[in-house]
Length: 141
Length: 141
Length: 141
Length: 141
Image (cartoon, rainbow over all chains, first blue to last red):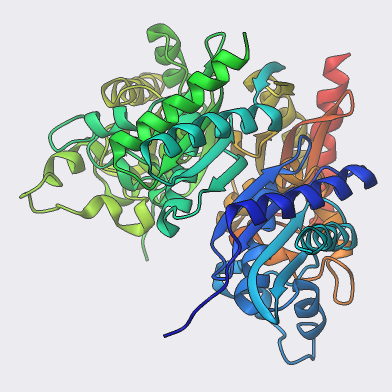
């Protein structure tokens, strides 16, 4: 039998809080998605002005990061033409995201969830995702 | 040009707050989804213990209620065998929900969004959706 | 080799014109879709106030009527529980519509396209679809 | 509560009129799709000779442009191999279009809808989309 650690809804709120604060700071209204370790959605928020297309993209980034235990921008690198994971971006009906902004959330070395951000540039999305995790980790101490 | 009123993220948080309070009261952890008038997700919360399948069902109930300007349980009635809308439940790739728990949110007679609840019985889901709207309407006064 | 007769865009505009006039008359803003004999969209119009969910449903009703050479309400009858086509409503990813409002358009006994209407009751949708065809047939004389 | 401006069906007809005129001028029959600010279809026209595959592509270009508030050809540039948004083209089940021909429609700095054109080269599609917007803007004055 496996015992799994997993984000609860309170954790998800802390993650969103950290991401929202950073998004506000850089002036980019974001879609923010938090999934559990299985990639299923726990919480979501579209800030006023966040993009319609990004509602789905944020969820799929979080899904990818949690489910594959890998940052989406890492997939971006290894899925370039000629690289080993080339073509993976259309897997799972296109849900597997290779654009930056999805990060797995690790506690004690194990993935407990994922965060996905969308509406800015991939670099902004990734920055805001990391800010969510940083805020969560600081709050745990 | 049309001018439309639409829920903002602060409104969505109030709706979730009301739904969460009622779900806690009846002891059923719920998935709670809030969409805008066009059916696109604004905010979502899966309470601890909410069902995995209900993450999607809650979102699709809110989408249906907002997009069709109709409560999902009303579709349930008119889509029974022999009734005029029989078979509608598989429309839009199955996203059109005819199970209770999705309600349109009306302000000044116009649909400004939708709320979808899932994880309990359809009656419980509908009750919790209504509680979200009641809380929102009370907060607007 | 087959020679096929097919609606052109001018025909589609006439069909929409007839449907729109009837929808206005009964006071129900509709989604109106016209497809060719292969079920591919030729023209579409969402009247102000037409439902978001009905954009897709109208297209799928027209697709079904043209592609299956059958009115969608006829599918509604033969897909009731215990009837021969029971379960057909979820075919083709849910695109096969069994709710009234989709009619094949026949000229000289051959299907040349389909019309699909959605946003009202199925009876209203079917009535408006027929009005589109009646207007088209009158204009041909 | 947010207040949003959105294209109405009369606006959509003007946009189509402008696009159709330009398509006729360059001799390329086009699929022309107009969506609202949320990416949902308002109006569509396939000119005689427009491509079957382009019916969906035109709709998805308009959806992308409105929903992401970005021209599809801009996505084309930033999603090239090695660029930040590489791989985005398969997002949202492949609906996110990175090929030119989709433009957001802005009024007073806010996105009120999207136009998507398909059947020609991407450059022709983009040209025709712009012509639709130019005609719409001229008609508003």
